[in-house]
Length: 604
Image (tube, rainbow, N blue to C red; front, side, top):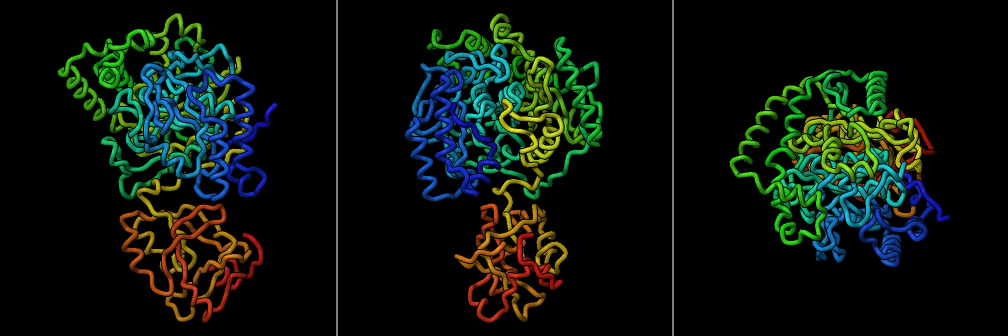
């Protein structure tokens, strides 16, 4: 049997740094497993083994990038250069010349693509059975659906074949499969992950989504994949000075608005989840979710479904024998709506948005079951439309109302199948949601995916600030530290403290004589093997970075500083000539220790 590794991003990164694993070891083990177990129905196109191994060797010759050596997969409606994009329909296939924007960013960060995954055809479905490549199933029971449309992407992560994967989410396709396979499923704010190079379902509503084992991994991928893309007309930037407030108040539907379609196990687990949140000192607040449900009805019972016809309607009309009959029925049926009806639905939606806006003054997140129940593949095949609609009861409104969401594992039924909830919040709430997910996942489940990784081994995730496209991460070592004389130059510009850590081991610290206030100089000395120098990493709004740099006097400068975990950020550095005329204070380990004359020879 081929070896299996803990594929969480944090674990692989640590193992690579320690030298106990190489990317080639991990990728070879993945392909060994794929040779033992048949590739379908999870995969539509696999990267050839030789090409994947060659990629690892190229990466090992020049190790860099936050996702260096991390294996991943993408849903087959997302372009990968030179690999067919089928969107779950072989007759639709084309070979793109370049990869989707999000894929390029992940590859640039050192990730390794294992393949493209199965899906409900044209991303139309929440079940994972509407595909000519074979229905995916939950990793916990082959009789039960995997959820869709991003079925293969979820199963690939849950079954330990990749560390993370990309899906898409219009009506719940990045959340329902996450729940049915015991994963984190991040559905970001529309536009934060570019849709350039993605076959659309509903172009104005679609999101690229992320499947991961834990919140830390999802945040790591999100930070790399997100970013403004001028080629995508729906791409959005983070608002300036975004504040990340921790979740305290959890909304929940009134008891008579909770729907489980007779599934007592799901109802029990939802009640237990709410009780667990209360035990964790979250405040529970009942709200009226009827307006949210009214918005949800517009997606498939109104003219918004016509967007699916705009995307692939002509192909469906021209190739009826090549399209899944359920998918074809939905897309063809959308052609009956008029432009006037579309505008009327838009007016209705705007009214609902205005009506629910005050809700967010009373709650930080809305916590709902991700899906009200789960079905077998046989049940879905007998009644494909109604049961699919049931699965979207709590998911369909999220993109219509421009909300962000994360699906979170939340325990197991007595039959061994997983249950999950989704935390929903206004746009640009991803980091707060992921922190909430980190807390609740660890408190409700002992493992993630298909028992491959213990939840206790997942690193906790603490919300930091908006992503690096809008903020500059800056390492400070002296007078700008918290409580020091120049700290106000950061806080006055809206900067937020992210963490305290150390530099890489080859930095030295010097006390700069005659500076007012007193300042240290940080100089890199290749070959030196120390313990690193303590620094604080701050997030500074990009719009404030230039004015801040203007305040930096010589011999100091702002350059690139490498941290002990390999991350590179901007930071205070010092010109090397200062080492000749100023005393070295490296042995103190930090500026604060030097000011208090506290000696330390080892790590903090």
